[in-house]
Length: 124
Image 1 (cartoon, rainbow, N blue to C red):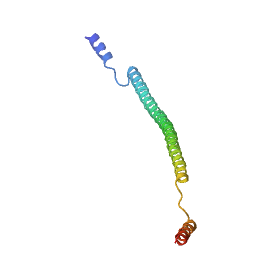
Image 2 (cartoon, helix red, strand yellow):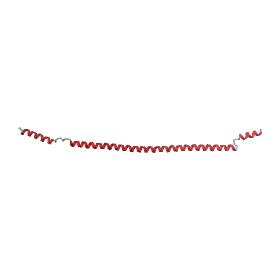
Image 3 (tube, rainbow, N blue to C red):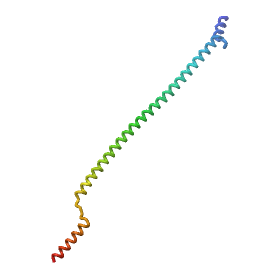
């Protein structure tokens, strides 16, 4: 019975026994390591989020810049086309005005009117 009592007393150590102090130290160390790992993971995740956000913003800025350049080029080409069309229309209109018959001035009309009156007087 004594042997069972000694085995039993070894299994249940008092809280102040040297073995239980070591277990507490190991548990504390494991908890500290686990907390450090969790903190490291959180910091790593925050850094990755910040880096990803910055990268997305840079890409968006580059895309906006490219789109602005394309839009400016298309606008320039459209305005150039309109300008060319208006110049051609001006040239065609100027050519039509030059080719159109001119109407006599008021002085020429008065001279023709007097000439026709003189012809009518002289013919009688």
